[in-house]
Length: 491
Ligand code: G6P
Image 1: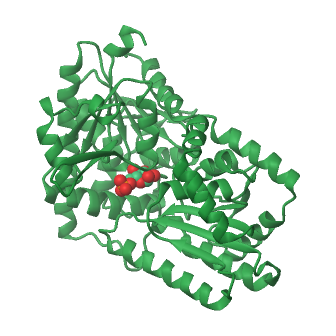
Image 2: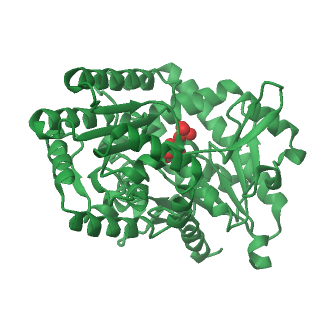
Image 3: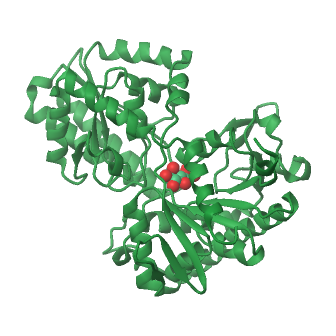
């Protein structure tokens, strides 16, 4: 790397950071790498691009580690390489309102269109206080980023802000540190204007204007970028240029980019060759005894549509008794956001449905379904390697990296059944079996077609899927956004 690039050390900001701490029984703190698509993508890029990462402390152990860090900066050498990390000690009450109430119960629900609108949402005085906390949370990030940018170097710095939690921070940061180049990236879908309008008017406008404080706004696929620009036109009266590559508002121009995050195939395959994964492959293969495997791996999240996936599997077993004894569905749903009651209820509903399927079909020697709701990354990789069919059927999803990782990992050239509402559909629809995620019967038919597909067809589809999935690995995905920033006038 050149001195010039080191001089322009990148600042990253996201709610969840690349590392988290836990206190052991003897009171010592131990660090582990954080999970999830955003974090693993950016962490992979950190090996190639020098960066300082600003994130929130998510637990008391994180807070303590942050308070002990020299100059507030956790040393990359002690974290096993990657970015230097600054964890913000955000007061618990502000964090809870910002993360649980606004980010995850409001903005996430809007962008994924998850509300049962006859009953929800309902914005009263309590929301006004929560929104104020969300502003404060974004201000704390903007303050920390402005301070880090000033301290870092004399040259103009670059900042890459991640996701809906930090949608207000770009404008706040631009006001605090004029001259910084600011990118924002949305890892979720973006709601179309008719749905975005469920937000209180001022809140909706503040979200859009906040994000337009960035010089470059990135999205995972064209559909989400278009929805964002439509919202800017409709709600803010902002001007979108003819090519739909720029939004002008309040004297500032934001360039719009589509950067479809992909997978570092070599790194993923190497991880899936480690002994913990091989051991789980042996266990899973023994438990399923050479039967065809339909695999799904998700966080237990309302948008993932696990229930309709199970209903489709039940219809398959009802409509095609020839599969009895010859197929097993592995559904690995690892825990997510369990502070939210909707998520607890959803997990319970999925478990109830799985119980009904077992009660209807299981016989001695054949259990048609293995649903597990605990986290075991190595086991998820093992299941993807063994999959004959991978089911990815979200109601709505920013990208869905499992749809990309599965074909790269599969030893059996899996067929992919994929929702049209996942961002990944933009790149994978030519070779996947596409389904409307609400249409259970269509999903069932696609599962049957996937199970009966010839080896030759599976092989050719799967290798095309794997190639498309690795087209833009994380380091290139980030570099592409930085190039977009560098091309802007004045940078
Ligand atoms: C998923 C989404 C990201 C989001 C993340 C937050 O990975 O695709 O857009 O940032 O969830 O998850 P968390 O567990 O931190 O709430």
